[in-house]
Length: 382
Image (cartoon, rainbow, N blue to C red; front, side):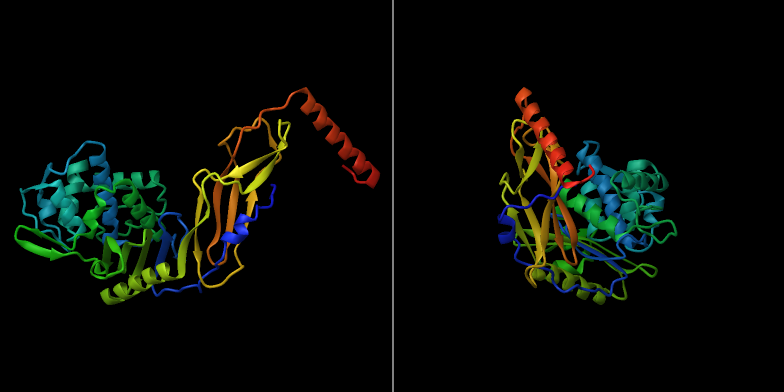
């Protein structure tokens, strides 16, 4: 693996190093920068834990996919079954036999955390809640959520119903990116169904910190948890925390983490698109090297606290063998930030390097012979 030196641009661009590592009273937590995926905070993030109502996000994701595929529309309706009507816990207060629109069910799940609404959705999409839970688990695996297993559509306590903080943040990130047309529902603060008005259980929506989603959860086993996202000045963070002892503790800790993430870290463009940042050696090409660029530029999330502790280098397996095509991914920029770790960014060849002809082969052979002669003169075995 070859590590070429970076051009002088990077030394000027990297001017900050990490904030003091933050601990949290949550049993498990994960906070990431939405644009770059940089992990700002991680605690027991891969532990499969009871997610309570936070797992309703998977029910919604399955519903949004069905609408995106044209199988459903917001104005379509599902009928309320006896099972849905009899559900306990948080409710939309549906009545058996009612025909309820998809849009109202979405609001019933997001704002009112309606277990009855989740069962209606599950039965409407899969015929039964059991079949829907099996679909949820399969789809989670396809989405890369390997620590998630679903036994129901609601998050009702069950020994086989588990999700990790990593999976919930991944799901929330996918929700925001894949279905921006539906994401505004998560910011609605109240919803009235059948004359009963209920407030959104997300305590962050009433604070002036840019929070606009997603879902709370609470059971005796899980404690108090929240999957949240907030945006300030065009930068978004998405997070999950769980295992807190009270609704108040959940509010305080969530607000603290959001303020910390925006205060202690900043997104910085290190390289603009297609700006050369290093070179890679080329073998048997019409040129002996090629510039390396990031086609979409490189933006990194950096902590503010100190300077001169961030390191960066370019890695590639070289020399590259010609021909090399412009835009071909041939290397990676590795950015190492204390407390955050390494982040890798793909780099591409800035130009074509065709394979050389007869003269190039002669020059290459001469370089090999010269190298061997030097080794022999130095007594190096080679």
